[in-house]
Image 1 (cartoon, rainbow, N blue to C red):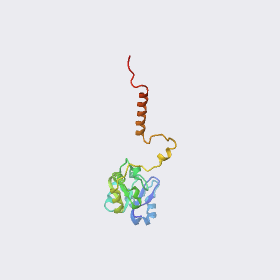
Image 2: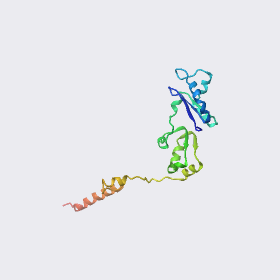
Image 3: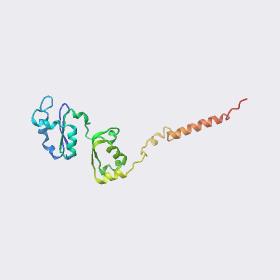
Image 4: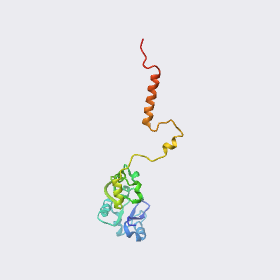
Length: 189
């Protein structure tokens, strides 16, 4: 597709990615990429398949359509068809492609977009209709959780407080009442 197609993966992890319509004739080319036993190809075209990640990123920045990675550079990549923003939280990546769609409306929140955008160290590509991006940027999520947990637990503990803070206050009140029921402060003789 227009977003890229993995066209070759050798046994040692070498990968060739073609962006756009050039992926159609990729099967024959990909077979030629890794002819030798060690996964290399000694012909003159093999040098184009030894690009580093830096050159690949530069190629993307300058409108290049094909990106190849050597086996050495692949250790810097995290293979995935898609990585959720939640899964990426706490990590950074040299390049991030963020896709949004109007169909994702319930998830289009500023916090989610901020988290996704802040994962990119060098390159960020946002693929989204303007309306989806505007919805996300203008929507601030709430801390309210829509679950049925309280309703499900109610029959198991009908007198239990609804939150830990309420439980702590109730326990402190019970302790104070218990002390007061004993006659208050004892007097010394």
